[in-house]
Length: 278
Ligand SMILES: C[S@@+](CC[C@H](N)C(=O)[O-])C[C@H]1O[C@@H](n2cnc3c(N)ncnc32)[C@H](O)[C@@H]1O
Image 1 (cartoon, protein in one colour):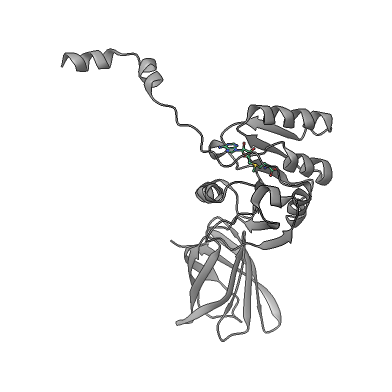
Image 2 (cartoon, rainbow, N blue to C red):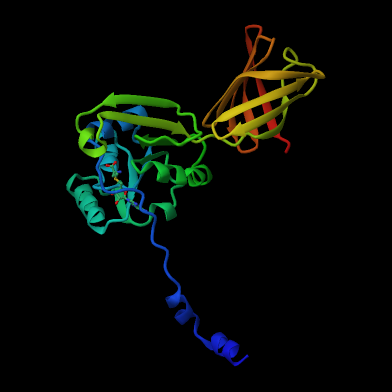
């Protein structure tokens, strides 16, 4: 009892001081991407002045600096090593882009990345995969994710490039270099209730969509019949599919719990829309 009273009397600060502070996860050593890979990554994402680039583990800052200098983008890099952060901010000043880019010393796993329109990383394979939930939760649908060498397992890349580079032998022992481009998928899983033109169906069209990150499958109930959705594709917030056995193609944009788009049937295009029921 006495011991409990003593414990309760201890100032919180003393208790906090005793608590071990978790060390940031080491997502990889400092190994800069060769400059040609940086250029290829940014070109693959078709980056431009409207983009906000976030580099996770920014090293000497080359990805964000190139995005700003060559492609007119803005953004930030997050890096755990003080000296690299300092070097990158000095380079930003020297190269006249400090008004558009900055580098912060922080743990990339704890950094808010929600402003990114393009997110880049060159990190160890298992740490790339540790980030999957964070990427899906914080990034807006349609945000581009570029990963140098290591894929996000279970995600379908939107684009993919492979090349051989002598510079990589020192880094990974082989010349093979890979760049993966992903689009953050909108969340579409669930039952959707759609309104379609009379030429497509007389009653309501109900969609039942199943989603595993970037892969979507589903069925539709139209005029009392169950139809499989064909060629179902989700690219960021753009969805498209056909109805099996019918020459009908739906395209649309997913915004939260709503889809709006066009349906092409019999050579004519008409608007359709859907709302997420559950
Ligand atoms: C392979 S380098 C990539 C550098 C740069 N992105 C490039 O492609 O040239 C990985 C960087 O991540 C940094 N890093 C590792 N773990 C980190 C963490 N938890 N938070 C922030 N940076 C980290 C390392 O210090 C290193 O500079």
